[in-house]
Amino acid sequence: MEATSPAASAGPQPHAQGAAGESASLLRRIKGKLFTWNILKTIALGQMLSLCICGTAITSQYLAERYKVNTPMLQSFINYCLLFLIYTVMLAFQSGSDNLLYILKKKWWKYILLGLADVEANYLIVRAYQYTTLTSVQLLDCFGIPVLMALSWFILYARYRVIHFIAVAVCLLGVGTMVGADILAGREDNSGSDVLIGDILVLLGASLYAVSNVCEEYIVKKLSRQEFLGMVGLFGTIISGIQLLIVEYKDIAGIHWDWKIALLFVAFALCMFCLYSFMPLVIKVTSATSVNLGILTADLYSLFFGLFLFGYKTTLGPAQSPGVQTAWDTSRSWIPSWREREEKPTAAWCVLDPVQVNSRKMEDC
Image (cartoon, rainbow, N blue to C red; front, side, top):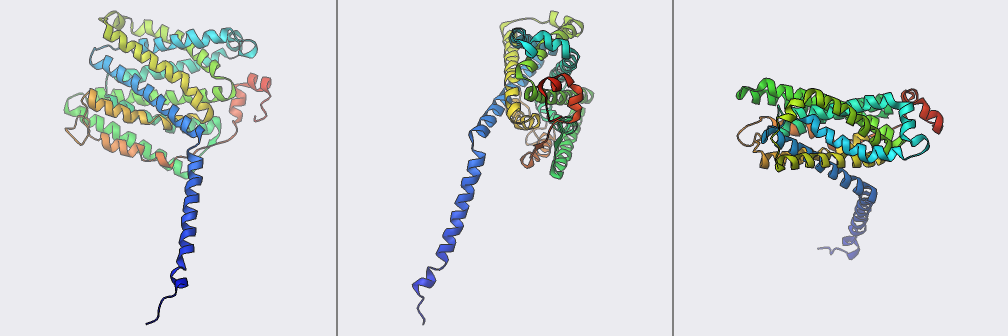
């Protein structure tokens, strides 16, 4: 019997060590790229935004279900007043092209349209809680992401790969599944038409949010965060105040105020104010689409709160809203494959904002 030489037995060891070294080197490179301070800070800020969104959803649902308070415009009006008192006043004390009067003189009509889109988006989403459930609202608002992608394609000149369009199709399939599940669930308790109205309101509100977010990304990156928040605070206060007097005067007069209702209004306003204040910071270092993807965890938080606070059931238990789990899996399955690449702004923005182009000599246009 021939003995095995030590050299032969030790032969594969250098190869194994080399493979282990390559794996360790690859892990170090991945760790170095993924666990940077900027990425971790962005993730942390995104989760803070998610918690703010979850806070607005919970307070709105409590007001609608427990206290029968149906005043979405009043809730938004308080937030716009806070933005006005802080950021619009800051603009009033700026000088040059950042001054409030200068901005109003040059671009007042653009900010009216932006304020109108933002106000109505908030109104539609909060109004939807009167017709459908917290979980449905939070799941269906992902419809704003494909709308945001389309707007970014034409306005911000973002470009995507084939996998992104496949992902959008999957997302829309999840939205359709969620709407169908809500209709079927509503038929069981004779509230199908009301649930469908709530779902439509969410889809419209999500689309208007996408318009607002694209404008926000452009303004924050090309102009300033203070200008966006100040002008939204100004025109948001005016528009929501007028709409408040027209559509919610009787509802506000019928509220039986106590400290619990007042606390819910304050909590909603603070969550919205924090959301508006911090979102431009995250958008400036990423993009509006990336931020909207990052805050999808708000849906998960809202689902947990809906299960424990409001007693909602998924298909795993007695079906109050059948298909929630299916819609959840379908509409979220595309998130890990997301990658986005943005190019220079299109000529569309040069036409929309010629004053800014000429004053800052933006060579990108």
